[in-house]
Amino acid sequence: MGAHMRTARSRRLAVELKEFREAAGLNGDQVAEEMGWSVAKVYRMEGDKVRILPRDVTRLLRLYQVTGEQAEAVLELSRQARVKGWWHQYSGAIPEWFQFYVGLEAATNVMHSYDAELVPGLLQSEDYARAIMATAPDPGTEETDRQMAVRMERQKRLTSESPLALWAVLNEAVIRRIVGGPAVTSAQLRHLVQMSELSNVTVQVLPFDAGAHPAMHGSFKVMRFPEEVDPDVVYLEAQTSALYLEGTEDVDRYSLMFDHLRAQALSPGASRDLMAQVAGQL
Image (cartoon, rainbow, N blue to C red; front, side, top):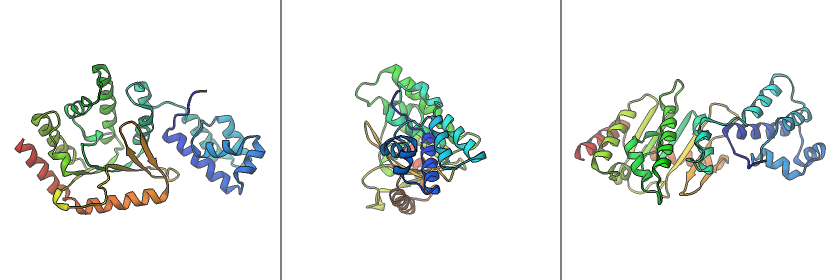
């Protein structure tokens, strides 16, 4: 059996099973004894650390006395959790640690994003994105083309039938940094202005003269989901890995930070004016 690939659905399934166990008044030891498993296996399943087989879900639901439509919905979720999303066809172009993010991004309905250095992927123009990708130590042309295909596919979330509500705060450095030359940067800024006119997209610039601010340690994203059972996630990206914070305290802290950032940033209208002005200067 291959390594477990987390998805938005596998995460929801793990949360649901934990809630059913708690509602049944059972602890991990009792479940392990009933099922003939190790306690570690129970908690790994509830932590979305291992793939959960539909037959195991059936046995757990029986133990937790979950029946009828509720049980059928959870079983369907367990089957769906194993279905690969569109992004898996590009698996070579997307590192494993990023595939979980792309799945979450496809499932989220509200995203709050702070970016310190570059325009976030969902708002990048193709030329700007290619210029960013070209900075990789060994960018192959074919690899870049596949990465571009993924990025363009991801961007459809902003204009789909039930579009993602994106609120992006960009450090002023993002709009001042020349990426791919003045013409590419100017076109990217005009693209940002255009995207920010969509009803579901808000872009604010955090100006240099705002001084010190809560996110000086770097970029982050807070993702919310339409299903109540799906906890919010904070996403922090590094060069070769990512951190997903799902604890309530962590999410609350970053949500509060974001509120402070958008309060310190220029208004959406003033931000558009500044981006258009910088684009004109280039």
